[in-house]
Image 1: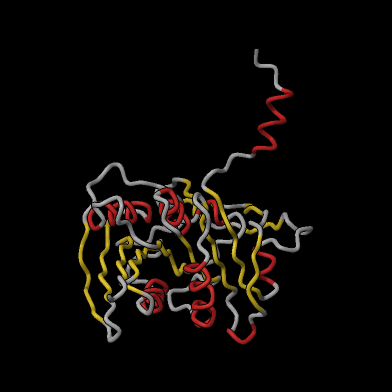
Image 2: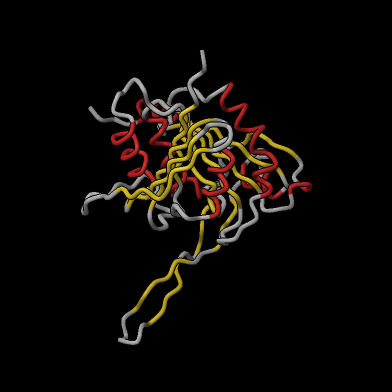
Length: 267
């Protein structure tokens, strides 16, 4: 009896036509049938945002069958990465017992290490997959340019993804994988990491438009706040490692919760 092909749901936040998602689709059809539902336009930094004010329209881009028998069905949606995951599940996985086997998001054009993980639409999609109880993983490369060289990801992708399939993250968790933008042969290895501490400063440049109104344009400079932890994801990347962070949906700080319950006087 022939085994059922792995059902892989793919999305991103850079848009359906980005080089990153096209690279990811090509890598994943080696493992199973790929359903790619990605934003029509770039949705970077949308985190877990939902579209509430306009109707969403799903448009089929293409369908392909490959020599190994696996298929790629590619769509775009005029919404956010989380919209894409929700729409794909509602449209193509009506039976709640037959959800996708995995959700894979990326490959993002730009790092999602440290504080970037808080804003990332790439990781918003993996959070949504984890909410459904689907093993979910996001891939990012520290290169924001449209024609980024994804050979570092291609070099190490299979090792990471095959481990992910064999040993998926626990319920309520998902994986955030970040690659440094250096030649593949210069990458020193793969390490599990902690989410780094840092933030941006002077995050907007101020301008005056031709009508005399003040405008703000996103800019900023990243400040590292994590010099003492050797396994911070952004610091490992600077050292030439691929960093894998295990992240949780539940963001409760249980130690701080217990402390505050003891010291606050609420009665």
